[in-house]
Length: 261
Image 1 (cartoon, rainbow, N blue to C red):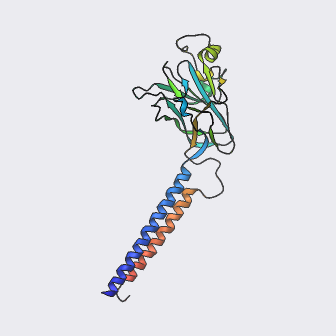
Image 2 (image 1 turned 90 degrees about the horizontal axis):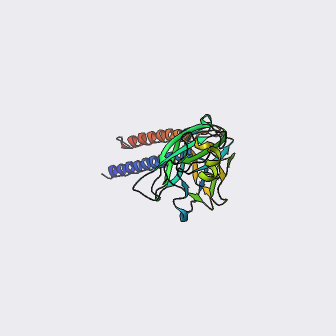
Image 3 (image 1 turned 90 degrees about the vertical axis):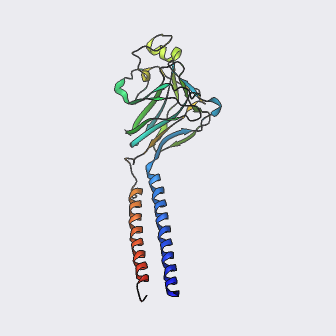
């Protein structure tokens, strides 16, 4: 009986070792996968919550941000904080991503467009684009709402900025009915003309302390990878090594239970 108890204790110990090894292997893979799953291209954060929901976006005013990159990225998503301070209705927002802004911009300069909605001010983050492949160049993200009530795009007076190598950020800009949109397309009072292409309006810089909040994240691998092995490969290699190790431990356990041992 004493020998059986000894073997049972040893088997339990080996089982615990296998469980711990599996746990740490899975944790390592999760961390590696997380590191590989997202790469910040550019991010402007630290919204000023004293001015919620933010700078106005409606049928009379459009807002735009820009960035320039020397790198190429795959599977890019773009998010912005859009609020309207009410949960009872959600006004639409038209989002444009172009490689040019202002006079002379046409739909030929458009990379993507989408329609999203403003959200309650306490939950403002909206993903306006995803799944984009973007090469080196300058990009303009422009938002406009066809409604008079519209909503707001949060901004920061003291932004926290994260940029990938080779990325620069342009000024936040706006086009207002009486100062910007009118200059480009002629006067109107209640709504823009039907032939108005919003990114082609006349844009001006916002005040120096008004930095619009946005983030551009590359969910896939960059097209400029480092020379070191990719994290996914390292993770798979680690899993293989762990499985081999567990197999050996299992064999040792079986041997320890064999008669005469």
